[in-house]
Image (tube, rainbow, N blue to C red; front, side):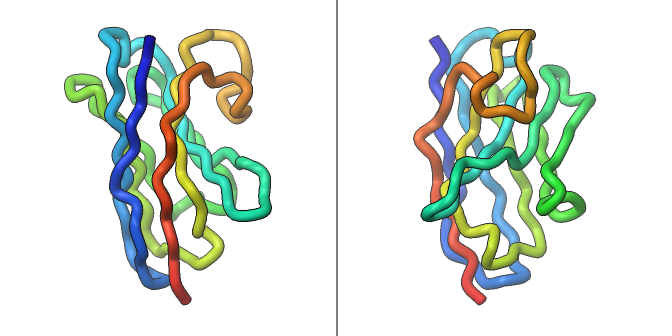
Amino acid sequence: QVQLVESGGGLVQAGGSLRLSCAVSGRTFGTYAMGWFRQAPGKEREFVATISWRGGSAYYADPVKGRFTISRDNTKNTLYLQMNSLKPEDTAVYYCAAKTRTSGSTYEGASYDYWGRGTQVTVSS
């Protein structure tokens, strides 16, 4: 069983920064891909970023490229999302997710097996 707990969300002005963390339980954290997704009010959940199990590969959704950075520390069982130059359209609940299966796309939420409860990020204009 894998449990994920996000933290670090909050209210920030446009142009500001936040760093989200996701603490992951489970001895095999270092063996599966991780991702961040977000869901804004009235919208569907969308992919934000993903990182390979060793951290050597990372991919981002176009709206966040160049502004967000995903990283992981396998010694601390923790996933991060550094968010810079935040915009009001980044306002959403952010979820971390674990993809323990090798099949399925890392860009699709349906490919992820475990999810956190989310942390709210609000960017004011």
